[in-house]
Figure 1 (cartoon, rainbow, N blue to C red):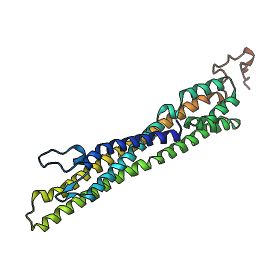
Figure 2 (cartoon, helix red, strand yellow):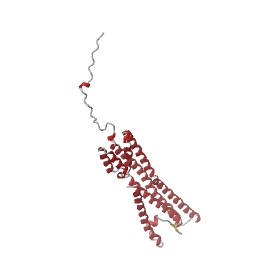
Figure 3 (cartoon, rainbow, N blue to C red):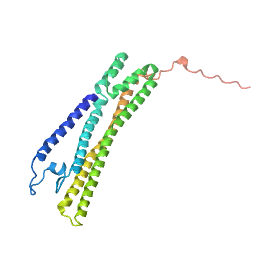
Figure 4 (spheres, helix red, strand yellow):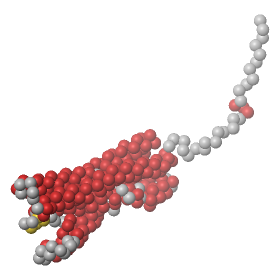
Length: 277
C-alpha cells in the first residue's frame, strides 16, 4: 500500500474518531446544567472540568489538547502498522516472481519487476540486480547497504510517534500542576478552611489532566518501541529473502559439489628407493 493510501486511511480514522466524540459532547454542551443529584456521564467527567463557577476553561483546554494528540497518535499507529506488515515489506508474490525469473535467467524482466515494485524488498532487489555485472560480493554488499538505509529511514519515521507520546504526559502534567495551584489558591482565599466543593474543581482538573496524559503517553511510547523492533525484524527477513534469490550468482553455485574421482593416470608415481652409498 502506497504512502498516500496509508495517509488517507489514517486521516479518515482520525476524522471518524473526532466526529464520534463531537457527537457525544455536543448534547452535553447544549443541555442545561443537570441537577446536583443526577450522576454525570463519561464526557462530563473526563472531557471537561468545572468548579463552583462553571466550566474551568484552562483545565478543559489541556484535556482537549491531550485528546487531539491521542487522535494524532492513533493516525500514526495506523500508518506504522500498515507499513510494517510483512505483505507490505516483503511481498510474497514479488519474491516468487523474482525467484522464477532468476531461475529462468530472465534477468532483464527481473530488473523491470523489481523497479516497478515500491516495497522495501523491491527497492533492495533493484539495487542488488543493478550490481550483478560486478559479481556476487557486490550484490551482497548492495543488499546489506540498501536494507540498512531503509531500516534507518523507517526507524527515524517513528520519532513523531515518540514525540507525541512524550508531549502528552508533559501537557497533562501542566494541567496537573495548574489544578493543584487552583486548589491551594482556594485554600488560601478561604483562610485555611475552604468548602470541599471549592477544592473539588482544582483537584478534578489535576486528576483528569493526569489521566489524559497517561492515556496519550502509554500507547505512544509502547507502540513506537514495538514498531521499531518489528521494522528491524522485517528488514532482517528481507535481507534473508534477497540473499536466497541471488544465490545463483554465487561463483560455483551451478557446479556440482560432488568431488570428482581421480583417474589412475593422475595418481602419484611410487617413489624409487634411493641406493645406499
